[in-house]
Image (cartoon, rainbow, N blue to C red):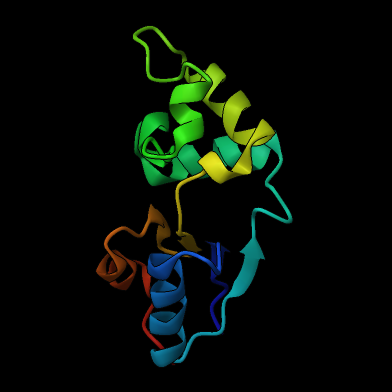
Length: 120
């Protein structure tokens, strides 16, 4: 079985649907409920790098806290965004799925299909 990890929030419909799609396809991923078990700084930075997306793409910009913390102003650095996500994991966009083929923020859900390895 190929290792798959999903950074998951069970209250998020997109995250639930992504997890369900993985299971429908025969994969049982490691589920990390990042609100209860936030990633370390190193892990978060590695996830961001692995997606190939800018840091801001993995931040929930529609979360009220994003604006309350002043993260919506020009000049906010990637380091400041990472600090905010670590201090307030609700700001981490989800679901992030990691497979041997890469990592991706799976919004929309169907993006997870590009990460699925061929099954034996």
